[in-house]
Length: 510
Picture (cartoon, rainbow, N blue to C red):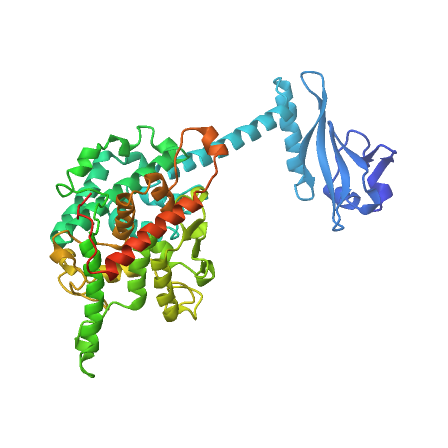
């Protein structure tokens, strides 16, 4: 059968089957006409159904059928009925018949199809929304902690949140990590703190460490929950309020040892400072007098770098962490200057600032002794195994390991010392730490008549002022006054430690 027998009319507008206008095409005829020869031609199938021949980029041909009708509002519209040969011609005609039936009832088939699509999409959206709500409702304390420690707006501490993660993974998440945020209560939080105390009691942990742990966890929980309270989806989950706000400070205090104070007040007296120097010297002499081959059993002296760290913390009022991160490139012994980059200082990122210390003769001498030990490295206190500085807690640990009577340890820690070599005043005033040296230095500066404002600046404290005018216009850095303060304190230390007849300050705990 030729195309001439198939096609009755071949007008410029519409092609009709052999039977003429109003007749239906046979499947065979449609297969014949679905050809590139008839590209973009329109065919009529009767009863308002017409198709357009398409040729795809792949070379395949098809006929797209629409039903042309006048809507109830009088508009001419095309209603898609399917594409041949992907869709059978019977199915295509059935779609047309359904559209005609809808029109007979006064329903526009195109608008009905659009409404069905909208309803389907609304159903899909609702399903997704409901699923998201279910997922959000199941978000737990552990999920909040993970978000808080990884989000760009979350907590970012100097150590990369390592200590924070270690504390939460040890104490918090095993107890309340699985609780849904929407179901978290103040009883859960208090129960957590009580559990920490109970475990410490069973293990006979040091009470001071326990008190500090409770304080830290309580505050970190508050910081985490308040961060979540301001952000979705956590805010939506706390519709009943933030449970941390229901805990009164006295409830936390009741879990701690009586008389506990978070802030230490330990200050070394002049006598204790002189005693410390004597202890360093005695440990060195005793060790050197031990016969060869027996030194392993003797008490080792405090290393020269640790001794220098002690005297530098005391004489410069610096933080132990700032000192242990120091690099030789930032220290000018000829000029008597030590530059501490803002990145090494304590504080929030946007509040950190460079700190320049004018070194007294006493401090310069300590740096010279240290340089003889580590001057061939980039760092003043280099790590043994890494091309960087030592751990910023190393000196604190070494000093603490020689005051074990305050540690309540059953046995020595692996690879650590376990004695009381550095206990001062026979332990009457308690344990001392490197940070206590910073407090001691600032207190002694006060006794020397140095202004508290200058002492604050020597410690690189942020000087708060409510006056915007002073903050914006008064930028004098008090370099001269600070240098004089460090000189006076250094001279006092030099006389204190090198003159047996010096008149010392009266020992007093602040």
